[in-house]
Image 1: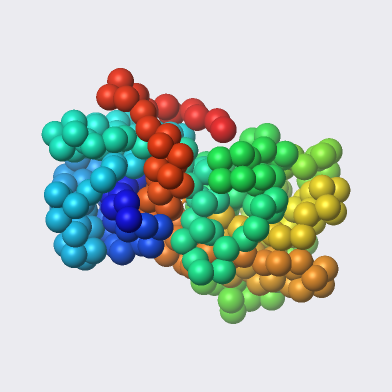
Image 2 (image 1 turned 60 degrees about the vertical axis):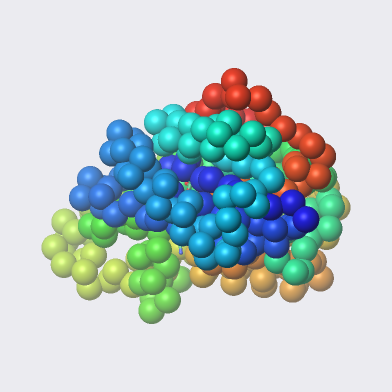
Amino acid sequence: MPVILAIESSCDETSASVCVNGQILSNVIANQTIHEAYGGVVPELASRVHQQNIVPAVQQALSNAKVSKNDIDAVAFTRGPGLLGSLLVGVSFAKAFALARNLPLIEVNHMQAHILAHFIADKKPSFPFMCLTVSGGHTQIVLVKDYFDMEIIGQTMDDAAGEAMDKTSKILGLPYPGGPLIDKNARNGNPDAYKFPEPQIPGFDFSFSGLKTSILYFIRDNVGKNPNFVQENMNDICASVEKRIATILLNKLKRAALQYNIKELALAGGVSANTGLRLGLQQLCAENGWGCFIPKFEYCTDNAAMIAIAGYYKYLKKDFVGQDVAPMARMIF
Ligand code: KG4
Ligand code: ZN
């Protein structure tokens, strides 16, 4: 019955989780609101707030799980990818905690953990499955052959899907992070009101920078004719942008599933919280008779529960790292 304490600090959420024998008992997430004023995450500020939040987050995670420090068998942490200063706080905390209590350390790749979040639920996907991992920094189609045997078969060549959401919302004058606001407005809009182009990128790769530019020009031209264009049509614009981003993602995912003959599809990463994308994947899977796996909202955006579950599967393999481990801003798998 291993008890694992997990730490996530790769971007702007400080999170701690306790997992006992593969069951998540707590998942505490301290959000950083300080970045809203800057329209994006300021790395230096993020690492300072992580320093303030990490001890209270861990104490809360232990208390919510009704677990004492003495019960912990291993410490799992996000090694990368992410912001170096932010990662450093979580990695240093995990190392210090493990050193003080003579516990094994487990490094976790943040992007693998987003995918392994599917193993928190009772209904788990079976290998091999295809996962669309979409976050603020990544957009990947991953062929998941086993817990730690994953192959990226397509990825973005420029902006990530979440970045496209956030940059579009900035163009529309919405505050950061804009993804959830686009989602909220889109629920009351017509997704077919405006047609934005679908980039023609070969294979399973993506590109979102052209879409961003075409949205920018579209808004500029229309605001030139009607200064209130955005305010008057906000819901329709959000719904149309959301639909375009979702169809770009799902069209490639479908082609990948067909080419690799995969019958189970999954979503992961912060953008998997998006309503249009979730509904789109459900429809795609229903039409093709494929299994559909969508994480609970709390496990879509950054959280330590996904680090804990990844840590649990590494613990079973005794896959530990030494005290010389250092964070990696760019970390592939
Ligand atoms: O995985 P995540 O929490 O952090 C990274 O590792 O990047 O993803 C954050 C991204 C942001 O771009 C945010 O705008 C987007 O996920 N996001 C959403 C929604 N919730 C979060 N995008 C669209 N609709 C949402 N409901
Ligand atoms: Zn993430």
